[in-house]
Length: 492
Ligand code: GLA
Image (cartoon, rainbow, N blue to C red; front, side, top):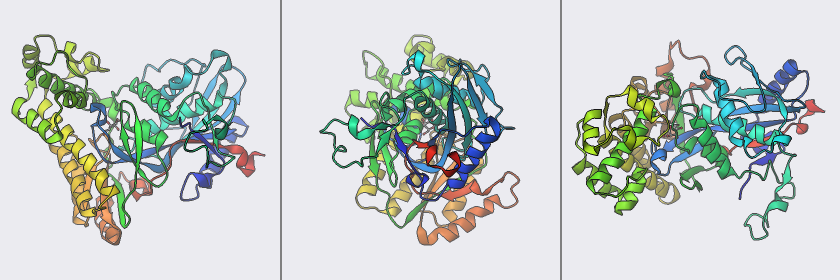
């Protein structure tokens, strides 16, 4: 039963001092509201090392949290209004709403705030709900496959949860005596609320972020909440479980932005949500072939039903689902019903069916089974042999599968990944949903200068470069937490 922690100093969160960032947000808060914030909520973005587009098929993924995050400064106020402002006010216009806000009709940054806010609301009794003054800032690059949206949704959920709770709670007092942590935690170890565990918060924020438009799996929210400092995470779903994965020494993961924004929600019907539907169509085709009495929900469930390993599932798909695209009419003939009946429990399936006329279930299923197998091997190597060469190969195989079978790469990503390989990367792959966004490359530390030299060519004279954040590496950071602002000198 782990709950989100309340920490006392910025040093407990980051490897590098980030006091100026918090000072700036507090100053902006004061300028706008003429009061200082009471506390900060912060939730990190993530980079996925391997395991792309498999979380919604029920398979484990292997991401790590970044030191880049969304930070929300908050002050509780009496009254029935939540005032929402952003440090970048021209890009993200302010808004105010009641304590029971509806999703805005038009998609904007506010949709993510409302998703996070609403995700915890049902756990807060009405008479305890409070008005809030809010200032948001974030340094996770937007629409770049590093999960800026989930970090914002999670951060808003956490800000709301803490503002509507009665203050920090001593963790020690709430742990059962036989809990492994109860013997060795410090006296002053505090949690934000015991109403919602970290795992429940991951599930709630995933469910509510889906309402913004994308039928996402749970990877981004789970890693943002559950990540542990210094390790990557092997995350399983249904139910969510996390196992820390040590990263081999002497190697660095370099993240580079292709500068092609991957505006997920705007293209969702023909890209992300379409893939979710295509995976279900593969499940239905396999279920039909084996005369299963009902259609399982995920490729993992169908695998469990058949009791076969990944290689055998790859054979099942290769032998039974033809390579050609299926048209809607062909699928309806096979299933003997209109297509919506096969996928109707998938959020936004109707929009996908209205926007597409053909599907590739075979290619998508082949990606999912081969990628899932790679995730297990990647974890195994990190924990045992630490063979960097093989880790790199797995990343490259993952990318080729994303490119050729899942068809979610982009021209710019291909160029960038090509440069990384020329620069001596052991492997390189797109990360996140794809169709633009970032790639992640694994490189030996001594090879870093050459890799940077090659990859920086991509950015030379590129008018889309606006800051230094286009290429960077980071150590795995901890998950979301609350920072109480009374520890800052300006707030006395
Ligand atoms: C997005 C989704 C995740 C996951 C990735 C692809 O980030 O939010 O759930 O599906 O794409 O791996």
